[in-house]
Image 1 (cartoon, helix red, strand yellow):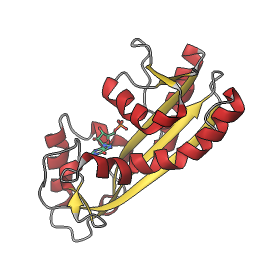
Image 2 (cartoon, protein in one colour; image 1 turned 135 degrees about the vertical axis):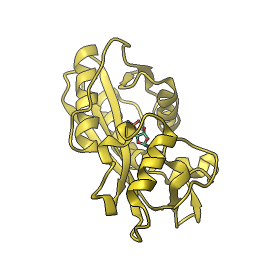
Image 3 (cartoon, helix red, strand yellow; image 1 turned 90 degrees about the vertical axis):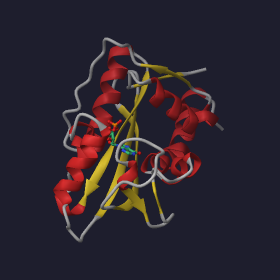
Image 4 (tube, protein in one colour; image 1 turned 180 degrees about the vertical axis):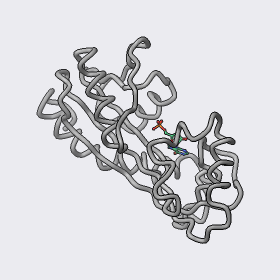
Length: 198
Ligand code: IMP
């Protein structure tokens, strides 16, 4: 079975990726703990590519990375690639975002997720992006999920990410959509490279 190193030290993220890639038969492993990669890119795609490339080069194995965050139209796309660094805790990040928006009427927003897969020499083999459009509420709703989930309302489902059953979020979220876009490309790559995934 071919190995794919996940550019994260977070076992939760590894499990989540395993769930999306379960059919493909790759063995996913965490990146070496001492390998730190700074997210210096200006876009989610740039960050996903630089994380995947650096982990692939350092380990000499295939690597996968994702980068995601929330873009709010009335804040010119903020917090964007700074979503994780927008506050110290989830509640601080939510409070800062709600304060920044105040009573602004335009509450359109979207979650974006970029994924990149790098070859063992660090070159990028595949890229995909998923977007989930929604609106920022005036106050949190729901107890599930993480991050900005309680203030992100998805009109298509009439629920916030935090109110949705996990299986629904898994399918319609930016991450779910990015993996759905990646899967067919990844299947062809696997078939070409390893004669698997058909
Ligand atoms: P990363 O891609 O793991 O670096 O995530 C970036 C940040 O974006 C996270 O720390 C969260 O604050 C936010 N984020 C990304 N995806 C989600 C989501 O599905 N729900 C809520 N917040 C998210």
